[in-house]
Structure formats: C-alpha cells, structure tokens
Image (cartoon, rainbow, N blue to C red; front, side, top):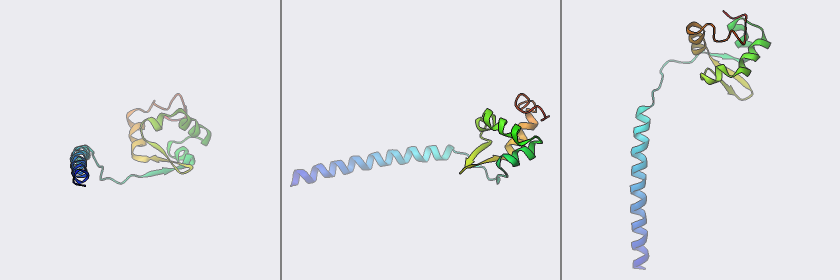
Length: 108
C-alpha cells in the first residue's frame, strides 16, 4: 500500500509540474495577443457587399468565389451567411483600389 501511495504522489507531482509549465506557456502566448478595442462594423450578406462596393450581386458573388476577401480576413461565415468587416474592406479598397479589378471591373 505504501508503494502505491508513493507512486501516486510522484505521479501527482509530475502532473503539477506539467500544469505549471502549460500555464506559463499560456500566459506568455496570451500576453502577445493584441486585442482591438474598436467595434467592428459589419456588412451582412452578398447583397450588402454588392451595395457597399457598387456592383451587382453576381459580381459580388464572383469576388467571394475568388477568395480575395477571405485571405485578408475581411470575410467570414456566420451560419449560412457571409459577414464582412466594413473597416478592413474600406481600407483595402483605399490602399489597393485595383485589387478587385480582375474580378469586378465596375469597382474603381
């Protein structure tokens, strides 16, 4: 019985050390994460995207199919619908107005 308790104690000590190491690792990673305080303005759905950038629904769908917005974390799925970060999309269009030219020729 004494041997069993000794083994259990050693195992518990090893688990404690492992948990402390994991906690240190987690605290280091979480301190490096930047949290934006600004609220995100969202554009909802393909119709909203088309209206925002000034093109038709078909061309807005072509933009989505191209993957340009997903690659830049501007677009994401919320259930069955797409959501777009309005601020990031506006910045993209301001910095690189030609980015969507090959996909949607009406955007300038």
